[in-house]
Image 1: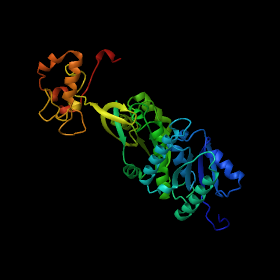
Image 2: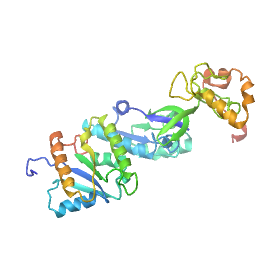
Image 3: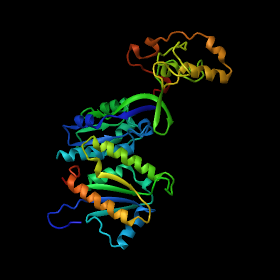
Length: 142
Length: 223
């Protein structure tokens, strides 16, 4: 991934379920896969712990994009936490679309604990996507 | 309880155009239950508004508060410590709360952030349906606990009409026919004879609001 002066490295906040996202992150790090340069990881016991307002606060406080890494549907240890996270993210996307925020700035990715490669690939794709969208104009820093 | 929906954010942003600092007041009662104006919704709306104004480089400072209710002076007074420096109040309460705040803080604009839709029941999480229209003279004793004013599209007092089909209303096919429900309920209670009693026409003038805003007084409670 390109980095350096003049290159826009979007700030990505990744909410990671401790049952899937965090182990996948650790696998990616062990395998020395390249991760986003400006990544901030927020572990949560389950994606269902993420309140809708956390997603908006992340964007308002400076994130260019927010990713939620959750377990596959049917695989949540808390039964429906990942489904709740999906609903909340969708609600946040619809809400923010009304003020002009691109839906792509908020995304949920379902994966398993052994998906280190997928973790890294999703991050890489998100960086490229956010570079095209540009810095988040809705955050406080602007 | 009262059920309300948040106003479209575009409309709220229009109201807030002249202001740089506001109080955003939720309400811990009805609008919390229907997820339109409680503490969580206040936080969500505050973030959305701040983000929208950030984009236009017109930052909006928001002070958040969610009193237990807005419709009584003791609770409205909780905003007292916050009004200094604020230019307006955006209230997520029903119209009662908005007006109580407007009367309490006469020098400030108090803006509504929700539309009250009806008085109703939580049918399931995320779904609410109308059940009462405050007609002023409850006849649920005669109708087995099903209200024909709120739940019959024609507000028939001696239904059903001829349009009910397979228990559904001819006006809105997805709606259950109130008089079918009344019949079923009275049958369960063994009170079908009540259907032979004619319910007289309502006196909308004296019982309801057709003669203007109503007032209720209990002299024994006035201190």
